[in-house]
Structure formats: structure tokens, C-alpha cells
Amino acid sequence: MKARQAKRLARTGLSISLLVLIGAGFSTISSASDKSNSAISNSESKYVQVVVTPGESLWSIAAMVAGNSQIQSVVADIVEVNKLKSADVPAGTRLLVPTF
Image (cartoon, rainbow, N blue to C red; front, top):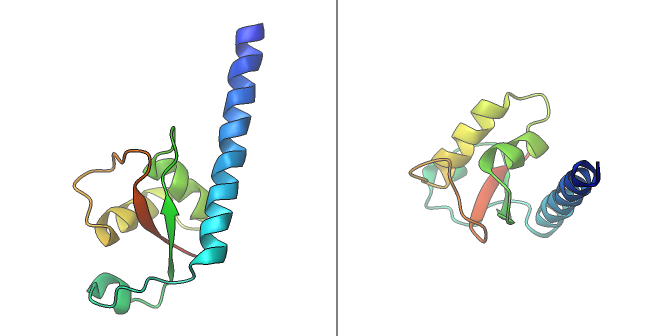
């Protein structure tokens, strides 16, 4: 029983951390400044920079910002814009994430 409560508490803490981190990213950087990247400069969408925290994945980040969009397409967008070789990203990685 205690293990289940500990897991639930850890999951809740991680979720709150993710919300705070993404909220901070949204409030500090409203769009990408690198105009040489055609995927960003030719798009009407804006991007914010977020830092991946331990336990986070592209899927969890995409789920937080997807809104009405499909999470899979948001993940694909993040991979493309950041020129990632895969959807696996280590903690501490800075990513451009689309805003909706």
C-alpha cells in the first residue's frame, strides 16, 4: 500500500514539476530567435524553449502543449524543428516546443 502511495506522490510531483517548467518556458521565451532555421522562420506557429527534466520525454512534453492537436504530430514537429535523430532526449536538453 505504501509503495503505491509513494509512486502516486512521485508521479504527482513530477507532473507539477513539468507544469511549472513548461509554464516558465512559455513566460520567458515567446518565439525562437534563430531565423536561419527555415522550419521556424517560415511557420506562423511560435515556439518556446524548454529544458527537459529528469523523467520527462518528448511524449510528456507534447501532451502538455498539444491542446487539440494529436500528440504524435506534436512529437514529430519537435523532432523536426530540433533536428533530433530520435525521440529519446536526455535531461538537461533544451528544446524548441510549438505553442498552440
